[in-house]
Structures are given as C-alpha cells and as structure tokens.
Image (tube, rainbow, N blue to C red):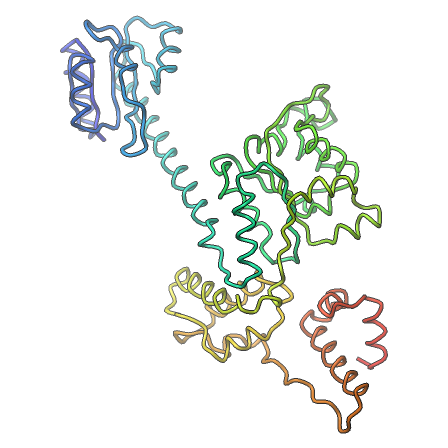
Length: 449
C-alpha cells in the first residue's frame, strides 16, 4: 500500500514515515498541498494523510483541487489531520470527499487503526463492485442459453422493455427460468446498479407476508419490538420480483394494487404513506385468468401487472435448445467437480431430446449435474443416466385399418408415458396431455391403466 503524507511540520512527516514504514507501507511525504498535486500527477497512491492548517494551499483547498474520482485507477482514500479539532471542520472535510478525520496529537495505534479500517472499506467496495459486475455478466443475454425462435423473440422483448419503468408479468411452468428472465430485465436496464429484491409469495406464511413486504412500526402488533423495513422499501430505486404472485392473499392484492397505482407504501401501524420509486416484475406458474374466474385473484390487479406479458415455453416445446443447454450444464459441472467431460454423446443426446422434461430446464440441469458426477468417460453416456429411459418406440396401430382402434392405441400409450414421466401424478399428467383431470381419470379407468 502506498501513502502520501502532506504536512508542513517536518517532525510530523518524519514521525508518520517511521510509523507507517514499520507497518509495511510505501511512504512519500511533502510539505504542502501544491507539491502534493504535482506528485499525484506522476504517481498513484492508495491513501493520503493530509494536514488541514498549512501555509499556502491548506488541506481544504487541496481537497477541493483533487480531480474527480475515477474507477481506474481507484482514487486514493483521503484522511485529514488537524490540531484544531471541530465538528464543523470534520463535516466539511467529509462533504469535500475525505474518508475520515483524526485530531492531533494522536497515538501511533490510532492512525494505524484508521488506515486498517479504510483498507477494509476499500476491499469491501472492490469486492462489491466485482460481485455486481459478475452478476450483471451472469444475467447478460449472452449467458442465457437458447437459440430457438420462441426464446430469441423473448430476448428481443426483454431488450425493448428493460429501460422502461413498466410492470412485467412472466408466466410459465415451474423450472422454465422465470426468475432468470426477471433478473435479465433488471440487469440489462437502467436500474442495474440498484437493488434487485426477489420474494416468493407462496413461501412466506400469510400472516407474516404483509410485514415482510411493507414493513411495520414498533408497537404495531405484539411482536413488533422495533421498526422493520419491508422488502418494497429495500428495493426502492430498483426492482422487486414477486414470484408466485398467484399465491398472494386477496387482502394483500389490494395493497399491491395501491403500490402500482400510487407509487407509495404504508407500513403496518403507520398513518402516513411513503413514496417509492420501484419497478415490479411478477411471475406465476398459475393460469391467472382461471384464478380470476374462481375469485382468487383480482382482475384489476391482473391488468396492472400484465402490461408486458412474457410467456416462457416449456422445454418440451423447444427441443432445439436441449443440446446447447445440456452441453452448457455439462461444461459448468465438469469444471465445478474437476471432471474432464467435454460433452454429451450423440445417442444420449437423442434420449434427452425425446424426453418430455416435466421439470423443464431445472430438471435438465439436475440430470446433467448428476450425470457428470457418475460419469467416468470424457463424454456423458447413457450408463450415467439410468433413470432416464430410452424413448419407447412409437406405438403401431393394430392389425386392420380401423382409425378408431389406432387412435385408442396411441392414446393409451401417451397416457402411460405421461403417468410414467410424472411418477403417477395425475394432475401433472393431465397438463402434459392437455386434457382435463376428470377426462384423464375416465380414460385411465376405460383403458384399465
């Protein structure tokens, strides 16, 4: 770490140089602000220790003369020193960009402690910047793996709406990547440096959900021992992602509607509302139009949420994405587990393509992760996927030319396959077959399955 000391007293410069060099710092010292600016034109420093009262350019003038901070290289952290300590002076130093203020005389331990705290703060800032960049890169369109026309159209739609403060409703089966799309909308828009807060409306017990979303004030109810900030307030300036919005109780749907209409929230127990700047993205695996008919979901809220609808197709409807997704996951988990697997072999890939994937992309990822762990070769083979049966041969119509008997044979085989894929779950099997649950039960009885 490199430190620039600015002080008109030679004894102070000498003392600080000895202390800091013992701690392993690289030290340069000058006697005034003007000299310091010249040194800064030629060299980069991590920290600056600057006296306030100096002849010529004093510490305050030096602070004002520093160039605007830039990320590359990072601006030095400035710590001001003075024997004339005053609160107003310290506040003015902070306003002008100083990190901290220390009063003279000080002990060696004090200045070292201040520097160590500043080092830790800078480390955390760099880590935070790195993590933000990593997250933004992760949710860049280049890292969302798909090449089928349906998904490419969705990418185009995301790019169009990312910068607009409009609500988005993402629908699709479980495992299709609804949160991934929500994050892509956020991190590719002008709110990308602000918070992204995700909440699963079905995972929080109904009695606690209002407090979690909107917060409460101390004494609002028995256990409210202190003020609590809600998730909407946490997301102020950024985006809140309401996953499984169809699970939101009707009494909270009214409050959400007010947020969307008025742009304000009210904590439990508070008499005044607070304005917030927030973007709402919602997602659901439910058919909200059906929930409206059942009086489980407010129609006016649906229209407020459904300004920009994004419907994610299930994986079985875009088999062209399965090869690139499978190989992508194979590469990720091969690196994670230190395996030399390069891809999925052709025969196994054909099985993956023919499988209907009731769990969608999430299920495919889990299958590939498991296969990478089990596989001994440099490609994933069928032996590492014993739980994924080869596709059954297409059912052949019975002898004769009866269309009715042929349809019945095919229907029976499809029902058997759907039940097998869903492990006997008739509700999910009915969804795969695109028939009602009642119709499926009738056909199971009719065919003796």
